[in-house]
Image (cartoon, rainbow, N blue to C red; front, side):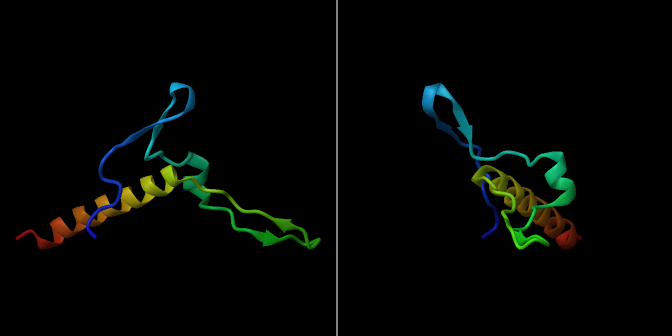
Length: 77
């Protein structure tokens, strides 16, 4: 596999909303990553971040693009 979510696609949502297949994660999420699910000091279950398909598609697409750019640079004469 050489790419992921390379084609932009929009899904028709309820009420005429356009749902994109990719969405950039928030600046906070980019800075801190995904919060894990864990038990806190009182033994309470704390649910981590939910992540949408759009955010995962964006991240994987970005990684594959950077990977391809690096391959091109490495293979250049």
